[in-house]
Length: 142
Length: 109
Image (cartoon, rainbow over all chains, first blue to last red; front, side, top):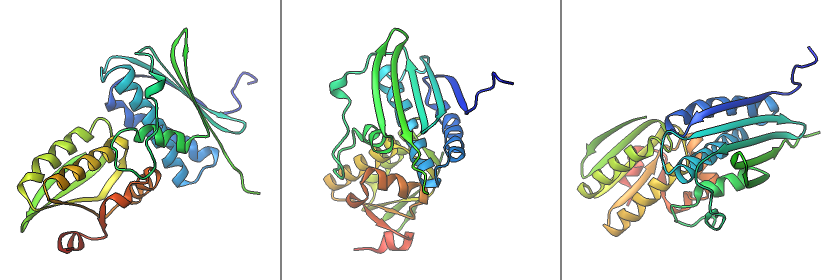
């Protein structure tokens, strides 16, 4: 019994195929609700993760559906940590930019959403591949 | 995602049911760009959309810009709570003409 995790941890290995995105969306929302976020925050977190996965599919794998994406969603002491790992093209940091708020540009929306919703966002190149890490703190009301 | 298109006078009304995401937004884009040149006003019902991501929002922005180039009206109506929340997060609602009902969307000057 002592080996059981004390907090929920979800791991997915999924192809870089948009058809699988609804499966992930259907999982992260209930996890966020379980941790304690309200409905609007659960949608926002779901959207942020969906946008991060879409970025991997579009930019790391150039819309190829046969790439591997490893996803880990971890309930942590302060809230939620999301980790994505892929073996596609390394993201060009200069091109990872959020659009200006309220403008009518079609591009950059996804990055804007991720940065707006999550508290911390980082992109790293590790020996295992491209690593995206995002965290969100649960602000508990007294 | 299911899409249907119907004629109402000089306008076309596009109904979308389901999720609009990276996998499904290209079909919505094709439908809207195909319908736009044929009408004076294109009205999109967003009431039955359960989820929309940035690729869906980007599609709407592209259609809006094209409608402005063609002197057409592209209007939205019946935004579901999920769509309203994504519009709030992306701060794009002010660039669209948004109405509560189909009648208002079709009759607005």
